[in-house]
Length: 364
Ligand SMILES: Cc1cc2nc3c(=O)[nH]c(=O)nc-3n(C[C@H](O)[C@H](O)[C@H](O)COP(=O)(O)O)c2cc1C
Image 1 (tube, rainbow, N blue to C red):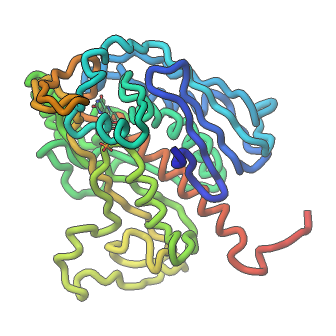
Image 2 (tube, protein in one colour):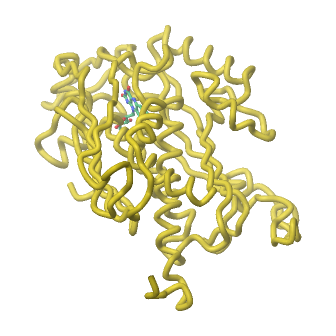
């Protein structure tokens, strides 16, 4: 398995299986001298934690972070930062009945076929428990962004058929509702939809929107590491994702050029655009407008309704979802999308430090 690292200059490697002793991440390339306390990371982990409301899995993990290296007296040293999160509420026996059956639309079949040997406990490495490591690393990246005055906000745009109407978003309301949708009436309808699906033993999917605000002009490395290309790569590496859109996205494909082009204007002595269908990126390079993306997630694969499948011997089998599962991954995926956006942004800020010869300076 060679795909466990992410990023160019701000590079993370995650490790651990869902029901193994611990999960963790090594961050390489974090600048020295950054103020970093465990509480900065813990706050982010608490937002992703399982068991946070009746809309999420009942697995109870404290997700307490331990900083093993790279930080001294609450400041980064420039050396690799290792963060460890011990698994405490693992119940591997919950998965005994699934040991030899392929859950429809989960990773059981592909992992076994590819590696020949797999950890079936809670999905092993394929479990979204791995994303705790990304959230921990994303919180470190956020410290860099805070230092530079860049804000990243992710929120719930859609759950099942319930969609948040286009309107200015009150970012301060995101954490006021367990769905993480910033508009109370829509959030309540989303909550009801998840609760009904859960009662039926079923699951729902949805869409998360994310805004990156305060970016300078010039992040992105054409041609292969365009800013939006790295964002898409980051987002589609999250479990259960099915789509990525930037700016107008799919809706923009139905517009005319005359409607879709973003007119340039001068605003507060700076170049801006009066609309933002581009989503803040042109030619793969940020243009100073907010970067706006949407990430679509499928309905959770493991449901409590019996489903037909086959076992490892190719014989028909019935899958009955037992154990603890998220009826909809969206509320917990919001901080994961935010974390991946933090990581990509910091990575590109560091990459942009060598864009021109004027930036290369040996003076200390
Ligand atoms: C935050 C989060 C929580 C998830 N919880 C569950 C879960 O409880 N049960 C489940 O079957 N899948 C869950 N998933 C999705 C699986 O991890 C994912 O579907 C599986 O690894 C197969 O990968 P794929 O859907 O990307 O193809 C979750 C995903 C995320 C992002």
